[in-house]
Image (cartoon, rainbow over all chains, first blue to last red; front, side, top):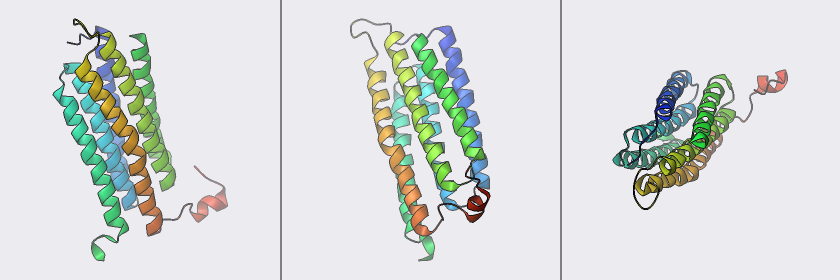
Length: 95
Length: 114
């Protein structure tokens, strides 16, 4: 198994806080974003940041299955972005 | 070990730059470019640091690195390097074809391209 030294573990916990600040900024821009493409972009960034959070958590706890979860999160985020963009480009629900 | 620490600190710096770019930039295309690119590079540095950790800090017998962690980090990194720019491109193409202008008029007159 992986044995982390002490200061690396503290650094990974600081990484948690930096990523959570990033998530809060993404949510602020999600609320005040003027157009709908801003909000789609924010969903993209939110999925990426949550993926990074899960990766760091998997490194701290040393579990392998969390990395599979991160892979699934990345796949669903990418599919969400592409399908929503195609749906809005074709006119949305009004056509 | 120190290499991993430097890579993780670089990823903090890039995430902070992404936050500043996200909240300050006014044009939508500039925002898409900066935010997605900076997050991709931040994930690159974070994954490289964690790969270095999974090689250095492994306590086991033969392979001298934790294979299960390493292969999943590489898979995540490859998938994100492929899918991040593609999703940004699809989003920007959707915005451009639906009619968001590239630069607004007041930006051109004032010479304010931030």
